[in-house]
Structures are given as structure tokens and as C-alpha cells.
Length: 117
Length: 109
Image 1 (cartoon, each protein chain N blue to C red):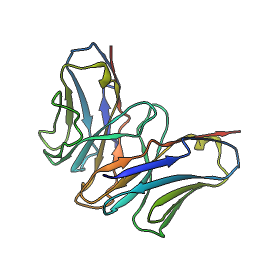
Image 2: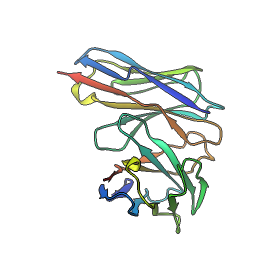
Image 3: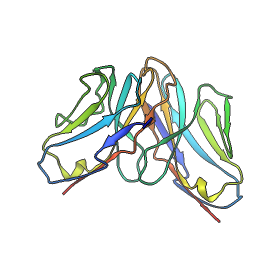
Image 4: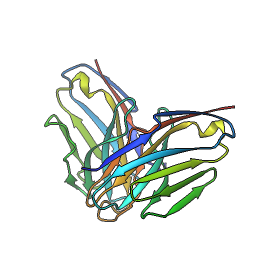
């Protein structure tokens, strides 16, 4: 497909477990973003990749959260020792140029709904 | 710190009843104001980008406008398929998007 793909679409886990969420961006997009969206809220920024490197990780809530993009395409968001408060929809977006270019449009995937029991 | 406030939180319209959604913002060095539409269970879908005060953009029944402090999304003669949550976001200098909480729009036949 031509859009941003996220897998799995739903993930149910137990408190304390480790989870990985995957994002496959639009082909050719150099920038990739992760957001978290809670019910009734707008998306909240977590981390931004320009190519393979994390250009801004200031939104990661703590050191249990980590993300990688080793080849500059697919990205994985990793959450260790999950807590019930981590339950949310995790959205991935990609854009052509990144934050160096003002107004660069971010295109979103459908998200992964994470439920921590 | 960039901030975005959207109002109202929810809006119910009859089909054909025009209205406007508001997005008030504070940002250091606006590089773009974005409107997205989000349907339940889906990711935000891009609608418009506005860059400077006075700018306007239109798409079908939607028209977005921008001033130095706020943006409006005008919906003319809405249809039930326009029902969704509308999100506003700003990009400041060297920063990523800051979103508002959105306005949930319901258009009844």
C-alpha cells in the first residue's frame, strides 16, 4: 500500500511485559514520528527520526520507552515493563523532508491500540 | 511552549447547517498550522496547511482561515459524512507538531 502501515493494529499485554510496535512509513519519506493518543486527547509527540537517527526524543515519557530506525525506513517503538498508564493508541507518521522544512506534511498510520491489563 | 486550544469540544449540527470550529494557538515562530480529520479507529487524515495570517484554503465544503492568534475551519452545508473529530496542530520553530484536543463534529440527517 501507499500509506503508513502499523502493526499490530491491537496489542493486549500484561503489566510488566515488554512490547514492540512496528511502523512502515511511506516509501521515500526521510522523516518518521511517533505519537501517543489517549481517549479524548490529541496526539502527543514522542520521538522524531530524520533518517536513521533520533533527531528529537524529548517526548519520550521515561527510559522504559525506546525507538529505533536502523535502516532509515521501518521503525520499532519498544516499551519495557509496561504499566497500565501506557494504554493508549500509538500513532506513527512520516513526512518527505522533516522538520528542517516548515510546513512539511505528516501522514499518519491507523495506529496500534495498546491495552495493558 | 507551543499551545493549541480548540473549541467547542463537541458540536452537533443538522445536515445543511453551516458552522465554524475554532483553533486558538500560541507558538514561537509559526512554520505552519495544520488541520486534520480523524474518524473513529483511524489515524488523522491531512486536510490543510496554512502558513501566514490572512491565508485561506478550501476543499469541498471546508474552508480554513488563519489569523495571528487563531484559525477557523468553516463547514458549509455539512453532510453526515462530515462527521468526525477535527484536529488542529501548529509547528513552531524547529519543533514538531503540537495538537489540540480536537472538536468532535456530528452531523445529523
